[in-house]
Amino acid sequence: MNFPLTPREFEAHLRDFGAARYHGHHPFHRLMNGGDLSQAQLQAWVLNRFYYQAAIPRKDANILARSTDPLFRRAWLQRIIDHDGAGDDAGGLARWLLLADALDLRREDVIAHKGVLAATRFAVDAYVHFVREHSLLEAVASTLTELFAPTIIGERVDALLSHYACLPMEALSYFQNRMDQAPRDANFALDYVLEHARTAEQQRQVTEALAFKCDVLWAQLDALYQAYITPGHVPPGATQFGEKR
Image (tube, helix red, strand yellow):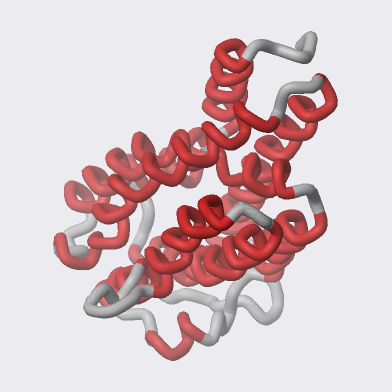
């Protein structure tokens, strides 16, 4: 890719680049969408994914603290509220726990991240470290995976309702809320990146930040696939899930 690109060209590049590397293509997601996961494998996903969900407000707080622009901070603060909740809205983390409840996971174990895969911890912690240590532009760019979230969320809700009878509609409220939140967040981040990434070096940094975030999401699914699907080697310290009761 010959940078710098015009804003329109750069947007097209980011959309194509991210779509090709997004974790919706992972075999674990294909199994989920096809109804081919056991309840135990779904439990493993929900438990490990919560470690990522719980890190999102901390990631966003780091980004918030980096900005000197009150308007930016005001807009970005909504991301933390969406996950942690405010007023009568319990927030996204609480809604994710409804999914855990529906799968008969012990809520206290999920909140405490008990039995989470080491690879999950390493990948998620690396993401929080990335947004803390890199430039604000790169940190914002790393969130651009949300450009592709609505498609995968829609597919996920349809698949979970169609194939997994143990999951009632109310257990999927996290995903339903993200259908509106993710496009809003992605559009804000995209506008910021297109405004601030004008040089060749800045556009390379943005592309690399998006690649890193795609790798973070993909690595989490790699760990789940290896531990709970094939070859099925659950590492020491991680939860050994039983079959559906």
